[in-house]
Length: 529
Image (tube, rainbow, N blue to C red; front, side):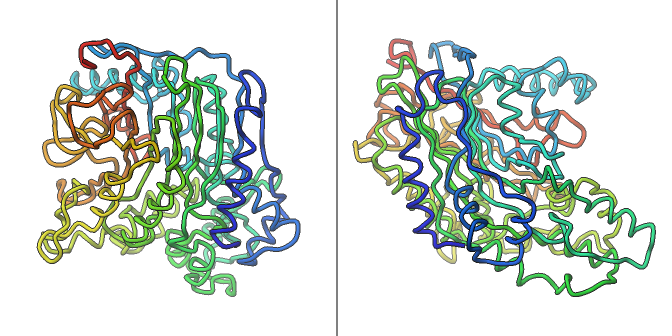
C-alpha cells in the first residue's frame, strides 16, 4: 500500500478533474477506472506493496470514482406540511447488498416488496409503520450507501450500486473502499482438504469463484435524481491495516492441507484480507431552487477495528478536506460509534459478509457463543455504558465513560471557511416523534438516547447490542450549531430510522436499517419563519 498522503493527493488531483466542465447536464455518461484481472488480483493477494501495472491499477481503483450521469428521471421533490418542497435524503448501510432483491423492491416497487417480504401478515401497527416508511424512502431523491459490493461472489457478482441506480433511474457514483484478495475465501487459489468428504465437497462448492466475473470491490455509493457535478474520493488516515493485520492473524492456514471444518469456520469469521482502507466519497449535485445551486454529499465510513481516538483522527481529516466547501453539505455514513475498537457483531452476520452458504458454516461451530458473538463491552461496568444509546453524551473519565464523545465535539465545533456550521439542533416540532435534544432534527431519538441503527441478534432483552452507528450531519445556513432562532432553510427536519421496514422480512434486509432526513427548499413556509 502507498502511504495515506500519496493516496489523498492522487484522489484530490483526480477529483479536481471531475468538475462541472467534465459533467454537464446529460453530458458524461460514464467515468470508470479499469478493473483488475484475476491474475492481477492473485498477485495482490501475495504482497502488501504491489508494484508494476497491478499496483498502478490498484491505486487508480482506490482513488478514482466510478460515475454514471445520464439519468433523465425528474426528482420527486415531495412536500411536507408546514415546510413545503424538500430534498429527501436517505442513508443505508446495505450489508454488501446481500439481500439485493429486497433492497431494490423496498426502494422502488412497494407491491413486489409486500409480496416478497410477507409483511402483510404482521400486526396492523407494524404493517402501517412499514408502509409509511416505504412511502418515505421511495421519495428520497438522494440515496447514500455504505458497504456496496461490485463483483463479489457473495452478492452474485453484481455491480450492486450501479444496478440499483439503473433500476431506480438515478445517477450514480461509486468509490472503492477495499479490494478483497483473501487467497482462500475470496480468490479460491489455495487448496484445503477436509477429512470429511461430504464437507469437502460443500467447501469446494462454496469457495469456487467465477474468475471471469470476480472484481473483488467493496465501497461507498451515492445515487441521485439530481445531476452529478463533481466526484472525488478522500482516503482517510489508516487506523487498521486490512492487509498486514489480517495476514498476520492467519493461523498459517495456507501451509496446511487437512483441517477440520471447525478450524475453517473459525478462520472464516475473523479473516478479511484486503487492500485499501476507509474512505469518504464526496459528490457535488446540482439542486435547482437552492441558493448555491449545488449541494455536496459526503458518504463516509469510519473504521471499526480501532479505538475511538482514531475515528476522531479520521473525522478530523474529513472535516479538513471539506472546510472550503461553499455549498450546503450532507454528511452521512456508518461512523462505527460503538465506543469500542471492534464494532460488536454476530457469528451469522460475519459469515454472511463473506459467503453465500452461511448455514453450512454455522453448523460447523462447536461453541455458538464464540468471542465474536459476544460484545466485549457487555461485561463492562455500568459507567462504560454511559454512551451506549447516546454516543453524543458527555465523557467524564472514570465516572461516566463515553470515548466517542470527542468525535461529536469535533463536528460541533467545526466551522467551514464561510463561517457556517453543522446543525446540532433538536426541537420537537421539527421531528415526527416529538423528541428533542442534541441532533434530534437530524437523527431520530427514542425514549432513551437515539433509535439504534445496529441491533445485535441476541440482545439479551435489549441490555446489549443496540447501537447508534449511523449518522446524518447537515451544514445549511447557520453559524451556531444549536441556536433555535436561525434559518431553517435546508436545515434537517423529520428524521426517521426505519427499523420496521428493515425487519419487514423474516431475515432482515440488512444489519443496519435505512434512515431519512428532509431538507426544505422553501423559505416562506410556516416552520421556516
